[in-house]
Amino acid sequence: MSVRQSSLRPSSLSRRRFLKGMGLAGAAVSTAQISSAPAEAQAQQPLNRAELVTELAAEHFRIRRQPIQWPNNARIAVFWVVDFEVYSDNSNSYDIAYHDYSGKAGFWRLLDLAEENGVKFGWYTNAIIATRYPETLREAARLGHEIDGHGWSNNTSLLVVSAEVEREIIRRVFADIEKATGVRPTGWLGSGWNTSNRTLEYLAEEGILWNGDYPIDDLPYTVPVKGKKIVIIPYVRESNDIQTYGPHRHSPQVWLDNFKEQFDVLYDEGEKYPQMVSAAMHSWLLGHPVGKRAIREAIRYTKGFPNVWQTTENEMAKWWLQQNYD
Amino acid sequence: MPQITLSNVFNTATRSISSLDHARIRREPIEWPNRARVAVTWTVILELFTGPSTGPNPEYTGADAKYSLFGGRRGVWRLLDLLDFHQIKGSFLVSGYAAEKFPAAVQEIRRRGHEIAGYGYATNRYLDQLSPTEEREDILKTLDILEKVSGSRPVGWVSPDLRPGDRTLEVLAGAGILWNGDFPNDDVPYLVRVSGKPLVIIPYTKESDDREIYQRNRQQTRVWTDNFIDSLDALHEEGASHPKMLNASVRAHLLGRSLGKIAIDRAIRYAKSLPQVWFTTRTEIAQWWLERKYS
Image (tube, rainbow over all chains, first blue to last red; front, side, top):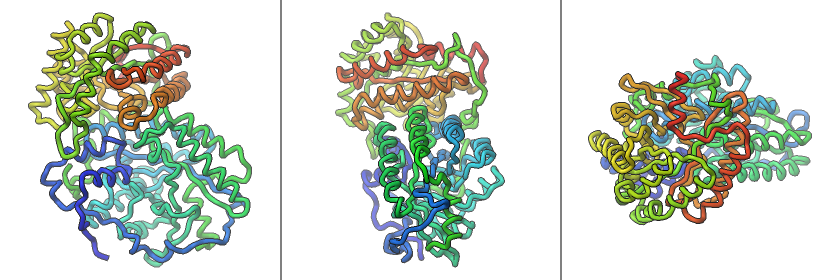
């Protein structure tokens, strides 16, 4: 498959939406960042190497109707993820400082919340953190949390760089995190859950077990990539704080209510048809004090039910492969 | 922004605003006066715009620029009365242009004993979008105007919309500034050295700021208050072992309108209902930080 250039030059408005869709920044920040781009850069055709729906492998369209089983016949698998994000120097001063909150404060609060409630988080980690805040990764690894790949810095989408740069970013993410923690990640969520038409291939070359970039089902499924089965664990955008608290500044209570409502429905369905749900928090959004009550309540709510599997994506992917689910 | 290539994609800590001084993590606790668990600052922004912002994606329109006149004419007076009623001192961030146009308001802020810090010449002039010369001139001109109008020279600075330029800290250190509030990156202050001079960085809390919640997203004003209360509860809990700080911020032309008064009043009353909360200003925090020789 060739690397395509977009035939459309996005208008400023669609560019703004595009950046927001990638989860690159809070409300006004991304537009301000663009407005500082020099006129020449604006005139260039921006790269857009997004994987097209028409190019997706057949497995992404396969419908699962038959129920699966979770360990101990759990009705529902619950996993907690943190978008652990920091910006590189190719950004404006506000974005760099606002995302530095992740390493200086947000990480520590979220880690304490997980430990206080006896759960392990999956940390979708920008590998820049291995350079800028290495002690956070060492601490998460020491406590047995899962560290997953999530791009090198969150202001760099894999879609707007060349295939060569994308390949190198992916290589560096695994290498930098492994170097900082001693553990090589086996899972990946792209910044803005974006994939180019090469991403899965590159990730398979780095030995991943699972990818989270396809928010298209309530349950995992597998796709063959380079002769290997990769487990796709769908991301749940509905309980992601960047959809409610981030750009729209809905109260963290809205995030909590949305999560609980999904949990209730899936727990009910899970009696006959085991399900899965996740909650996602950004270290620089609900990692602030403002999010603490909502996160604590979300975790405690799920712990009040029997037959709930508190897990992580690595454990789920391993289970999926062991059971030989398709 | 430059095109992303292999030569720049992995850059971090190459700029003054991203240097590793800003990335230092404080794990050891600090102490506040009287063993307070949380220091709270009440920030009022009295800002003006000289026009819409420039660039391909203007952040502010001409209508936004006009909207801001409410602050000096009416909003700031309402907020001054509310602070007096509760007998608390605020940290006022004032644009140079606002001080030129509403000198009586700025003098009244001073007369009632509140702190005044610089907030750029006008909010449509982001310092990181100006030339190095303009960046420097905007800062120095604003400090001069505020000194002339209010009678005392500010010792603190926040850049419009927290967008410092790469030379801002250097200019501030050269101008004798004690603290800067451009970095929303922590729950406690930290010290950086710029051109050999100490500068206390006092993080700004965007999570309880009226521009994000009320103006840009038109959430109810009670969302602003609820966010402040949730934040304060969390920090008050953590502050038992690791004292922290929190900022509540409103603009004179936004929550300074009648619609905002009940929300602000509720936030103040809630903070007053908790023990061990230090109602303070950024300058007092900076002085405390330097006295205690915290890093």
